Image 1: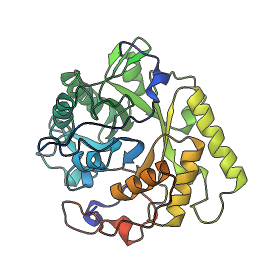
Image 2 (image 1 turned 90 degrees about the horizontal axis):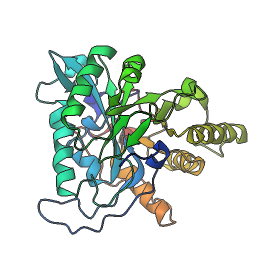
Image 3 (image 1 turned 135 degrees about the horizontal axis):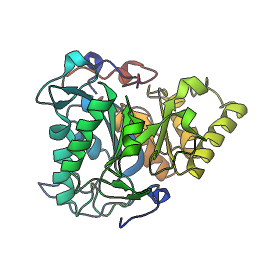
Length: 320
């Protein structure tokens, strides 16, 4: 998926798959030193694009109530390393150390969920960057080792648990379909809409906003484009798929807010952003029936200490 270059970033009991689309449930747990984010209520539409680029992968997203995080992975010498580009891999930054192990610890503290009492989907979107087949095999093994928190895809049904993994990027659909038991779903593209693939295989449909829409949030959304957006979402939901677009405008301001509002009005399930504080502010203001006053006054930074590119006027997110 599109990404902001790292150097510039500072910032069930078996249940039908349709039941995976659930409303957010507010956390009512008390804040304690070992649970500093316990009072943060989950935001069911908030997706952290290239989450690993933030200062604290996973943890920063959780502190803002995000319920979907994205990790790019490379299979290098048998290890699943998290980075956008091959030259940036670090042996200490593994899928297990940054995401799976912390999610196990979090679920243990929060009563078996990522957010205590939250019955919606918490999504771990794993964007495979290396060769599809071998990398998926390694991802499946890692997820199986953490199966106590992972949603299970078995015999055409999904047993939802604390974390639902979805495989994006380089995907090996035949290998996934051949498995009787999986711990991840397949991230489809617009071409899969109408394919007949069941939601127990394809729980999520993602694509590049700019391939289908020219509107970038400036002025009213053209009626024909709004109709196309609503049609896509309606058809996807009828098939049991959740919907996400990448490469949407991510520069703080009225245009981004207008586009986010149209996405929510259409029923899009995940809003893609690098700006954790900005999306949280937008969604909480919308919940309260008010508008966002403007971008965050203090931009966040990533581990490089640089100002995130969205605060410099970046208009999209690159695939990543």
